[in-house]
Amino acid sequence: MNTIDSMRRREGFAFLAAFAACVPAANWLIQNIGTFCVPNGPCLIPVGPGLTAPSGVLLVGIALVLRDLVQRRLGVWPAVGAIAVGGLLSAIFAPHALVIASVAAFLLSEFADMAVFTPLQKRGLVRAAVASSLAGLVVDSIVFLWLAFGDLQFLAGQVVGKALMVLLAIPALAWLRKRDARLGLLPA
Image (cartoon, rainbow, N blue to C red; front, side, top):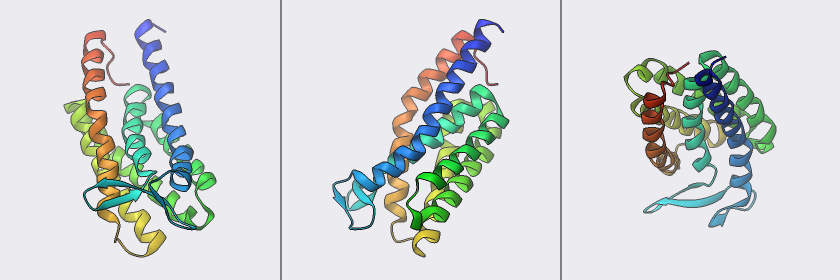
């Protein structure tokens, strides 16, 4: 294995580890960190004027970007495996009352992300990651809120909170794209 391939694999596994860590960390945040914690419910944070969301949305937005980077470094099938492992972790770490909503939202949003990212990545990492993450975060928010609560009352806060994290990832993605081009680290 040459140095470029070795570097691609090391980075891919680092992105994979970070992606997997987002699932239990998001569930921990939701239950423990926020400006206000609903009794027997989520801890909330402000995400915009008049908007709040469960604190875990921050890591959900990052997880969508990290899944794209796993695919870019390791390929489609390792990314599918990462989604499956993430779904299992979601089932393990989600509060019991929210397991079905959490797992369904995770799996559907990550596969929606993949469906958008895969064809777009040839047009540029940043464009593909942002577009696919936005698609994934909308799917995640709608599926989770509908299955967990039967309504979409908190959709705006969920979408804004996740989108903020995707937007914060853009400079890192742009840097990674430039570095990849300089080093010849093309997608797997």
